Amino acid sequence: MNAATLHRKPARPFELLRAKDLMTHNPVSIRRDASIREALELLTDRGFGAAPVIDDAGRPVGVVSRTDILIHEREYVRHACPADMESAMRDATEWDLFPEPPLPEGFSVEVTDPTSVGEIMTPAIFTVPLDASVTEVVHRMLELRVHHLFVVDRDLSLVGVVSPLDVLGHLGV
Image 1 (cartoon, rainbow, N blue to C red):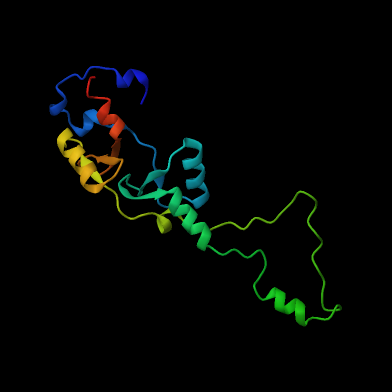
Image 2 (image 1 turned 180 degrees about the horizontal axis):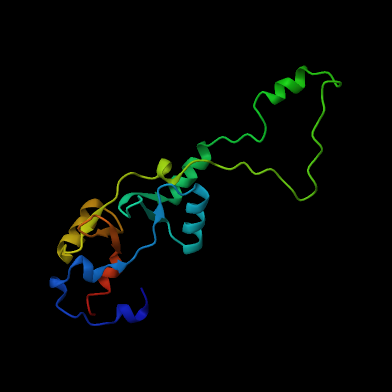
């Protein structure tokens, strides 16, 4: 939303507005099968705290947040070598050990995380239909204590998002 959006006069009275009038079109979303790294890059690059997760048909199926990623990172254990390697090294004689040559300076081994966004997302998403009234939108936000409602069409595909700033921007003050 930009300054011009905040100062425009509504095309019709505020109380007659619908979700489709309030929403930001084509919200940034992420696929359920995307990697954790892709989600983190999206959220960081765009400065978002969370993003809707969509299925192959474009329907919202959840929300992934930075908090979801942090919790996963705290609980996910990575091993660059097999867990039994340490005990094998303790039991081996020096003749049994043929260590790998060290990596060249500046190189490292990266352990990739196979977890998908769908595995860590919050599997709930709060939506409103395109024709929901402004009153319904505001009441739903207050009732659910959320800062964003996702707008879906008749096929339940994600088409927009409404934030409190979107609502305030249409007051015509």
